[in-house]
Length: 149
Image (cartoon, rainbow, N blue to C red; front, top):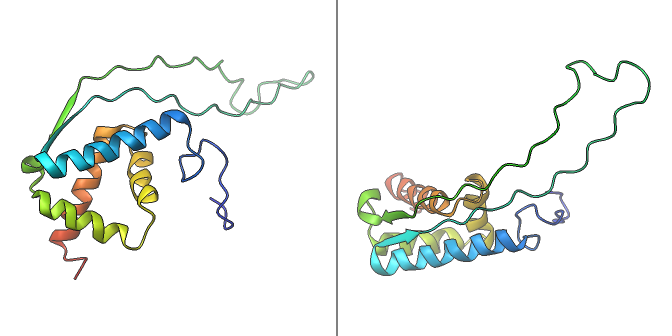
């Protein structure tokens, strides 16, 4: 991200989300609020399409054309993987709903809430269940290390 705060569209930062990324953000928020209420949540992840990569330059008409490592193989689009629902419980992580609530608000105090949640989604390649698990484990670590004190 540049110093001016402008990011290209589809990079996964606040204000530049694709429709799939927005859906994943809403799904993570929903899961986060549900797990605070019930202590457990089941997440059905929908595949997120990767943003389109910029077109590669055409190979030179003259010369060897292979470059140092040879010519690149044509890109084959990956098939979306349909995953089984994932159930996350606070008990298996070792947190109470009150600890999650307190940690969430302590983290949001100095940051944009969307930026905080998007950070975990981007880190886990837009996989909502993995992003939620990473966020909850980060909250637990912060509590164990007394970061908020």
